[in-house]
Amino acid sequence: MKQLILISFILTVILGCSSSKSIINNNKAVGIKQKSFNSHIPYTYINGYKNYEIKPILSIKNNDSTYTNELRFNAVNSAMYTKKIMYDKFGKWDKEFWPDGANQPILIWEKRKLIKNQNELYSVATNGKESMKEMFASVIVFDSKNQDCLSEDYKLKDPVVNFFATKIKNLSSNHDFYDVYWKMVKEHNGAK
Image (cartoon, rainbow, N blue to C red; front, side):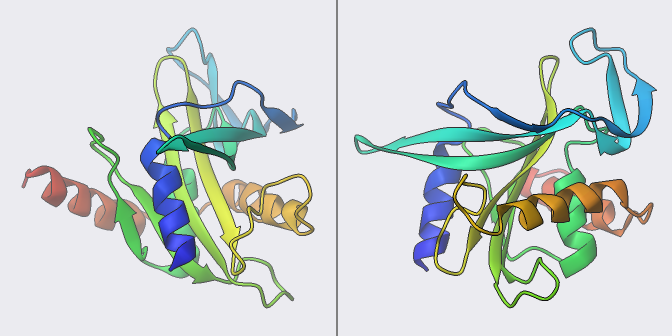
């Protein structure tokens, strides 16, 4: 429960203040390079990304501030890649979080085993952004002890990052996720 409260707290302000310091972990593009019509993001990558970074996100609530690390895969062909990864592996999400004014939710899966040969269960919040300035799919990950799995000192950080980096490269062409997702979004937004 504490973990869910923390994730909800972080997500409520995730679209607000954010730190400008990013830690680029991989500058090597992977996937199929595709020309875009956006001069800020001239190429996107099908089943891939230009690079990935861990970006500390500053959250402020009641004069208390905290940083949570978000793993972003930049210049993806779809900002929903991380959502699709989790759906394809674990099925429908446990919770939807709708930030104020958002027309699409952040999807949350709780208590999922991400790393083979490890018994740890993780909570994962998936998000993404498609705009003229940014194009990324992202995740925030906490373990069962409510530790930020993308922090520098988290012992399994690399396997967690590699889980998502590898899954993006191996995304299926199955559209089941999109059917379920867009139906839910339309129902929430009042469209038929």
